[in-house]
Length: 111
Length: 113
Image (cartoon, rainbow over all chains, first blue to last red; front, side, top):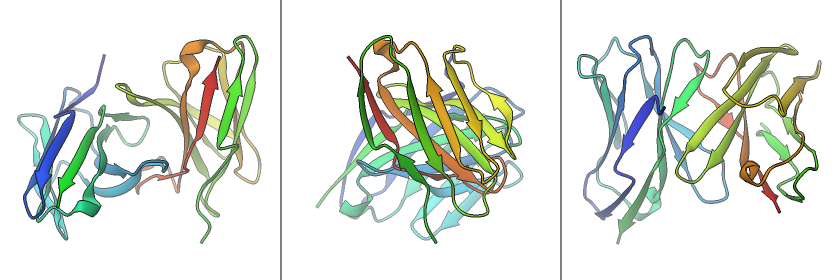
């Protein structure tokens, strides 16, 4: 059973547009929610992370929005660039004992 | 600062064989986690080692095992390989449990034929 459900599976966005990827979870014990970015032939790299005591975290063009009551969180990429084309994974963990990853979203940003 | 090094990068094995994958974490990181990545399944947690002790284990059969050495380097072993074991195996290094972020290696691509 997938502990973290991620959508969409793939996303195509025009350069300068906003990319939005959504994740949902069931386990209310999760207390850490990172997003990872993966380029072909590379391992995932930590992009941004949030804990449930805040509803939003922004780092540059990347923002996580967190809705604790709905058990959902999302990644927004503002002013999307072709260099952002990659696969994005959300994840969730309970004090780091085990991380549960979403199935990934393949983002393509068209110039 | 050197990243996480995984060797080998590619492996082709036959069903029934066994395989050992190696991971050297970032210097100073004592936690090493292993993940299996397959298309459509995302990343599945295998196990985590900290100071030579397995702290957590995912839902994989006993054919998957690992160990960690005193220098924090880790190995993962898969015995009696099955076709379904074909995947990218990722090693993740962290200070402690990945709560400050994992640093992943580039992975070992295992193909079982």
